[in-house]
Image (tube, rainbow, N blue to C red; front, top):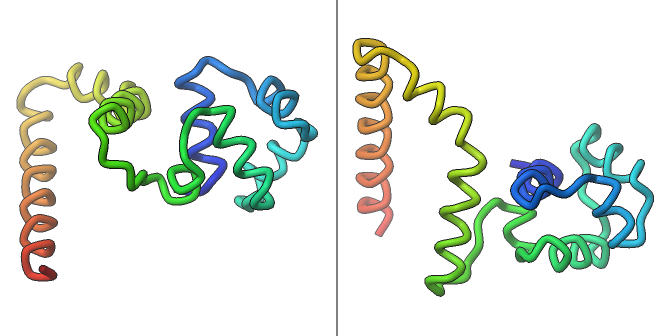
Length: 122
């Protein structure tokens, strides 16, 4: 996920607009729109300002992952992920069992493959 995609997730999570973020960061709102449209990243100092306003790390905005291992950070990360995928979870929950079960089986298979790769890489 690109920088601005992660910013959009955080803005949605916080109930904040691009305009409000731009005002607080001291940048033009159009720069946010252009960044989203072009998939570009802002300068380092702008990224730091945006991260501080959103209450996340620059690392999270750039990579979607946060290296912080403290429990509070993990709780916020879980909450952000839930918020990011809430619509998908609602759609999945609305499916009848016979349509949901193959999707869940696929997710389980992918999880197992990822765990095996991690073990092999270790």
